[in-house]
Length: 179
Image (cartoon, rainbow, N blue to C red; front, side):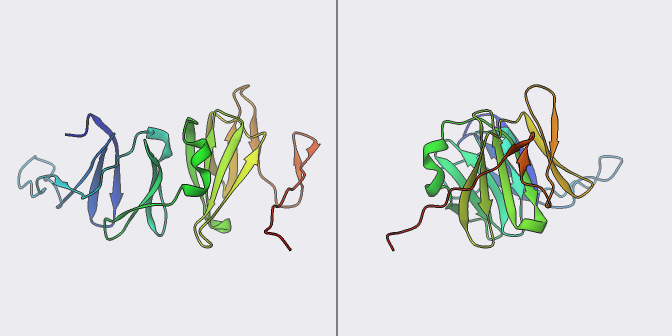
């Protein structure tokens, strides 16, 4: 049920099995090197109507696993409760996620897309923001620094002392409630 397996992830002592519209988990140490004494449990359905539909969207955080489903971005917490956290970025649900990277020193998860935007979730403040002009085929933490690969093959590296994007200055737009 739920289609083919789309992703696997370890969450504490459980192996989470993602399908496109379902999630399961199993526990146990597994077999020995000789294949004997396999104590894996049978897969157990996690009560939810979502799964991981975008294979590059899965990321482990201190809160649990964050992933994109066909209904938006969800958090599977350590109690195996799926919570919808992507309401503020619903308009990007049709975007294809090319990577999901945990940037620990900023408490952010960055979802790069092929649509010229990076969705940024601050899991400490539970707030969303976006980076524009950020089309990426992949993203990674390399030597403690966030880097991403553009479709041209160029790799860009984040620096905390400069506010330029390929020599173009970066402007900030903040929208507030009526003051």
